[in-house]
Image (cartoon, rainbow, N blue to C red; front, side):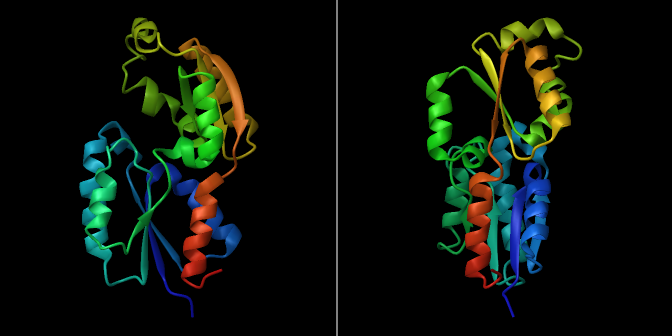
Length: 203
């Protein structure tokens, strides 16, 4: 019988991880999500992760952290190091990098450093996670100040969803940025989870 695996994930990845779990038949994967809005307060993410890991240690054969560094300046890695190498995380600095892949993201960033990125999750929640926190809904005149160093918006899509593609186009128009679409699929999120589940004997 495969070992049970707990994935502690950013809520921004819940839809993608659940889709992979269903597609791949990972019945022994358990998912616990942390509110994606903590990305607006990244200093709080490592402590929350530490609390969740300690809460579940001993209840699962393996625990995996579905976060990249996510703006914590290495603090997630320092937290995970206290568990003596037992717990790994997703590769890279952020979700844009592990969805696109390290090399592809580096090419995108080098081609235009002034790029604002969206994923499926961010396109779906653009108003809630971008417009409202920046108060652009009540002070639209701030847009040009916030985004004056940006020139394009790149939509890194995980699924082929025409509705989300149109939302991303609208977001680019709203921010006054050129639009580019790059389909990534699940990228290194899928590859890394497959390795974790294989190591647990779940295929």
